[in-house]
Length: 105
Image (cartoon, rainbow, N blue to C red; front, side):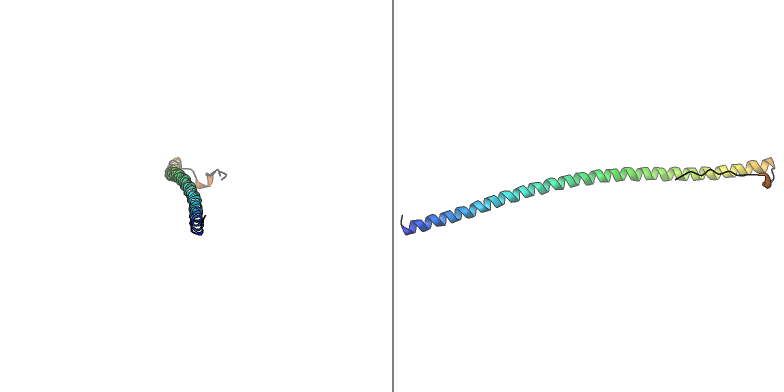
């Protein structure tokens, strides 16, 4: 082989090596992109599930608040009724004993 041909041959080999490295790097980057996109999909799915769970919890909280308000109103009505019945019965205040049950939290 002539010197000129050897130079061309080695130049071609260097170019092939550069392309080979670029191809393997490209493959690695494509794989990384694939992994990242899969991770993003998983995170989006988890976020969506969390948002649905949060909505359910908010709905439940609103129901409990409404029930609590309803029970407070009922308690006020019951107290008013008790006072009215006690006034009709004409019982002395000293003879009245109130019992209140405590609920453990």
